[in-house]
Length: 238
Image 1 (cartoon, rainbow, N blue to C red):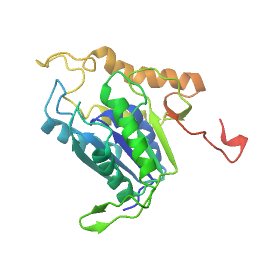
Image 2: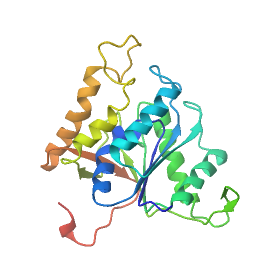
Image 3: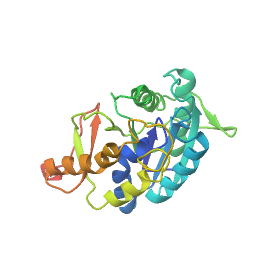
Image 4: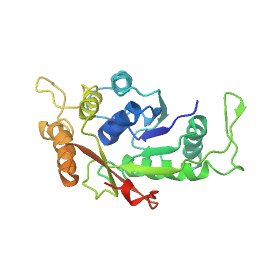
């Protein structure tokens, strides 16, 4: 199955928080999108791996993605090595995306930067024909995405470009709050975490609103890229 966009997250909820609005926008425009979670988020303070599985499925439905898979890497302990790269390469070759979205290049959680580099490296390696992989006994063809973009997470990293999600903020928030065990709930008896506060919950919307303010729209999401962005015309830039 070929997809237009494949979004990777170190943990379930990374993609929704970082680029849920952009995904909803592209799907609305007829693009096919998939999500690959590297881990099940089993080290998360609140909830369990099982509740995350259920929440991730509900979030995927909220966004309307075509497919969602989990690679089952060890939360907190996966590394950017050949073993893990090959598993990511298999997903890239399986879905042959034109664009890959992945974690922030620098962030508070150590898995985010690790996941970012792992996926970006795998995108390059996936295009090398001498690296052989197979799924279900079938040999895969080499495939390299045209672009790799990194969404912004905890840290306010300066974006290289911004996507207007003014019409898609509702879908983004619905997908985020599918993770009921993770975010603000005054009745919860679970320990507090940096993302379970009301401040964090409110920040999801006000950060998107503030980024939108800077470019003259209601809501926006920002991305960074390690490659120059090319346009056909100056009039493609808003």
